Structures are given as C-alpha cells and as structure tokens.
Length: 247
Image 1 (cartoon, one colour):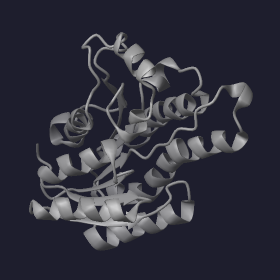
Image 2: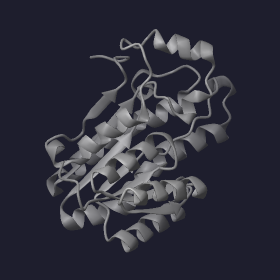
Image 3: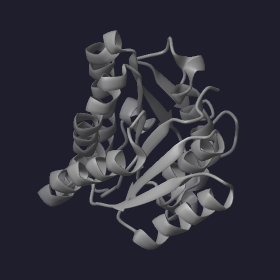
C-alpha cells in the first residue's frame, strides 16, 4: 500500500480503535508515534510493535492541553524525523440529557474530541507541508451524523470533526495532503463495553449486518485512507457501521 517508511502520529493509541490503528499501520511498515494519557498501556503497545520488528515511540499527553500537544508533536518529529500521517482518534464520553448536563462535561468532551484534533493538525501540518505529502484522518462517529439522545456533547464534537475534515481537505489539497474521516458505528471497545445489555441488544436491531464491529475493521479503513491507493480521496467520510446509516 506504499506505506513503508512513513511516520504516523496516533492519538488515543493506548486502547481500542487507536491501538488497532497503531498495530495495523506498523504492520504496513509505518513508524508509530503513540499518544495517550496511560503510560503503561502505551509501553505495552510499543513492546507489541517492536516485537514484530516495527518501530514505535510513546508520548504521554492530555490531548486537551495545548502545551502537551505541542510538546508531543515536537518530540515525535525530533525522534522520528517527520509526521506523514495524523490519526485524530482520542475521544471520551460524558453522557447526560442536555437539561442536566454540566458545563464541565460539555467542555471536556468538546476539548478532547474536537479541539484536540485542531491542535494536533496545527502542530503536525508543518511537517506535511514541508514534504508536500500528508494524510490527516479524523475518527468521527455515526452519532455525529445522526445525533443521539443523551449525547449532545459527543454528537456535537463528532459532527464538528466532519466539518473540520472538509475544511482541512480544501485548505491543504494543493499541497498533496488529504484529509478524511472514518465514522465507526457500534464497535466493540472499552467505551461500548460499559453499556447495558438492553442498550446493546437494541443497537443490534438497527445494524443490518446483525453484529458489532471490531477495532481492527476500523483500522483497516484508516490504513487504506493513509495509503497511496487513496490519493484521490479527500474530504470524505467513510462509514464503518454495518449498515446503520445509509444514503
């Protein structure tokens, strides 16, 4: 897929979709700059990549903190030489009906899920512009497309990522940099494992394929969008949802 020798910075890489993206891209010959808050899990990821002959470095950071984002990008470029691929995956939920939602929970979700993507793009884009090649991939959600009761903050943040994706696609297209989004549906991760069995069963009724997805299935789509095979795709939202949303 033409990825050997590339460098990818992945946020939220310690678990779930981010972890799967790191392993998949490393498998393709990409050097990984893994960013998350959990140092122990990051170290386990680095060990898993290096055990397979790949290269990975870990950077502990709160993605909602601009100074920590700046430091992580600067360190990754210093250690690995560049950033070719940026995967903005870090995300949290703080679910509540709007009438009961605390401002702190709104701010935490928007800052982590949306503002962090803007910050990482801002601090990584220079490397891509310099070499006139880059891939920005934002992990959004089906709920950023459909909305979801009790998740106004999460849905707003993920819808915002779609708008950011399209704006960036237009801004950097002339420099041979693409910007796309991947919109997972119901994926088996730590974020979804805590949901009630009733909610999980109800969700399956809305999935034509009749099952939840895996982080690896999302990671495969990220790897494709990062590759030269996807060079003519930009400003696109790739749905990975088992048919939950069509049209």
